Image (cartoon, rainbow, N blue to C red):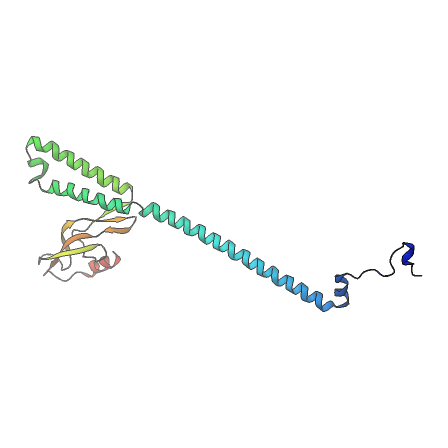
Length: 199
């Protein structure tokens, strides 16, 4: 028996909720579920991409910090190399070295030698190392040929004179060595060619 609406009881008909329509049409519930799954997959993809981008940014920042730590002093180091060059030239300009100099000049030379050693040591502590060139095969990666020197006693292409030493910073070229290269001698040996290729 239906209740009388005027009697204050429950209404004769209950309002129908939207979800009740889904019960009548199961296809729309499946469609809505598929849409929600697609949205979930899209959001998961966005989250994964954002995490990957954040990780890449963090890795790039760490690489930048490491690169700056290794190579940040490069310009300063290049300026110091001219000081090292001048100390070397000062020592080379004294004929006979410290032993041949008069006693007054000997102490100055010993001081300049100590200063040069300390400067080279300080450079090495910061990853700046000198390239050994003399007697080695010419390598365009590390040497800048300033002249050719006729010398039939050494293989052609051997560094026989060094005008200015070269330097590496953390294994990367800071300054190429300025060298004189031999010509007119025998062809370089196979072992020397392999050493030159290895650098």
